[in-house]
Image (cartoon, rainbow, N blue to C red):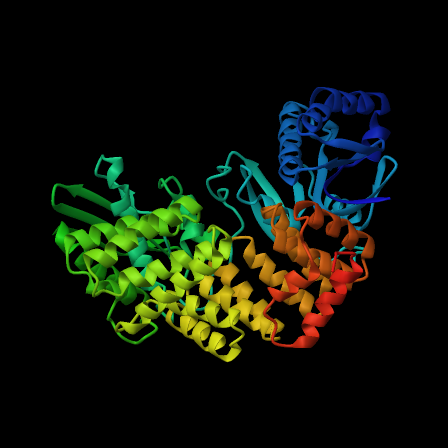
Length: 583
């Protein structure tokens, strides 16, 4: 028997017995025509494999969950089109369910709860519709051109846990690869005022000025991240709404926030025009709008006025209780320009962008050495290099990160980034109380920062407070539904160390689907499977780890794990040893 992850599509004909009773020959002929002229081709073109056929249904396996959902949608759309002009009582309609799960393959068949869930989803679906599980939804919601309706958790016969169900909507309402589908699942806004700042438009007619619009938007974002009474969606999530093709109300519903801030920037020589408007998604109205005409040197005044208008409209305050802002120490147009160029690359999340941002922030420290702005962002670029392995010397990058972080916190006020870096340094040195204190300070200064929240989760996990770690990761993911794979590493490890092995396995698998080559996630998956008693799978993952890193050893790996409690480290060691990894 072989275990593998698969997308399972289950389909059947609605009212098959009734149709056969009315006209057996006609029903069979119509069903065969649907299969020959539509269904089989849609399955084959997307790499599907038909597992079994019954008179009124089929079970199909796909290696790609996106392919499975697109196939299901195409089948329903094609069947609906073929039914045009057919009397309602003679139409052949399908119900379809799609699930993503590990299956057991033997011979040409597949088995397991994942198959059963797909069948239950199919039976639950209305005629002509597709229902998918949350496992499917989480993987495809931003990658297919379909809408989704949240039907909530549902209990199915002989399935132990409730299944969260989503219904596929009409095709053509989304934009795969660029953002959530129109009418996508609506998230409930948090209790506190919630906002997302969409990418600002550059109306200058010169693409070289994009950095100005992006820098201004991210500077406003960097200021509002300190608002303790505000829930702010992170930049990585809103980036998909670039271009202004999705209305503010729709974007707000998709991200689960009440307010959307939009803006546009136009530069003419040394003149700057900025327009901004704040939309209340719930009330469906613009609650604040303003236009600013300034000379370029006054760009920060515009930023201040926009932030003040938003804070007033939302009735919130900054975490520090003060209106002193980090950027207020930048005094020249040159400093402003360099800062915006760096900031426009800072959140992009790639190695090259991180390097470009660092060059800009290094220039900023030379242009204005008495400002905390350059050191605050500069220390973080070095930390990101070390954290993500984008450096030839991790020790050198961490030393640079620590040096600039210490410089940042020596100035009056800072934006909290340096505290994340210092907490990491303390964790590496096994100074747990100092690491927690620094990271709590970072979250206090940056309550809406997903990185601060998830790194605090990481430290809590190493300190043996796994339940708190899980809650912090979930908070980070709510702030930025588009998150990096290391969030899943923290979540999977926290679940594993709290004894919730199945949840750990699910989180690790999710992360590996996001980043198939992630070594840390595979080690967590291996250890979780081993501790859960799934030794066959644990040993299979162990072989993958050694194949990718022939020099891997349990001893060297454990040395990198900064656990406070020796018992946790010992349990992890035993799990890896049982999986067959080399000592």
